[in-house]
Length: 124
Length: 165
Image (cartoon, rainbow over the protein chains, first blue to last red):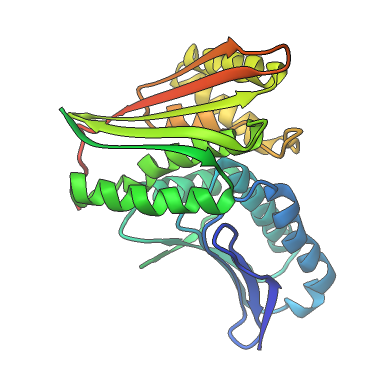
């Protein structure tokens, strides 16, 4: 079953959790003005539902374009995921890169450096 | 000789930025052929338009792109409050004066701070544009009324390094 945490629009990604696949997905363009509020909602959802996120959970990010405010929001969300990993959750993060794109590969490298963990790259 | 140009005047919102990116990415693909840096070039437009959307006092901007020989130029005009206009110009001057190491450090400091700007910005847009290879960012401001300044932000980026697929 797929739970929609935030519905996607043209300018903000859909955030969802698939309980069967055990995949938490953030997918879509992110050019939102209030990136803090948007990504903070996802963090709040994880805080409330952490007990449902036990076992091997992959947090997948597929963001073809995003503004720098969103980059900061995405980092906040990834930091929350890392906090879970540090406290013993078997979580991992995957980052989607289309066409070996430079912008997406650079962003992946920046997130890895800032978080101090490796992101699995999904090439599409 | 100009290879491609577009000039838009009017309201801008989050969805409008997506429309520009769709169009620009199509134009760049057509004019430059397949490259790995099309999204990076589009991200410069996203950051400029994002600034316009946040700080324009009437939500209107004039946005221009020009592809001419080996350069891509974006220009954004918007009316802003005096404090926003002066802060933008000062910020552009500061990051222009930084070397690559200082920009990298400024980026790390800013993205890791818990602070978002009063209008929701992360203060990273212009920094990202220069870090990612734009040649220059020029911000000029001109007083229009006691309460408004006209801001003109211009970014030029070289196109001479095609990245093979």
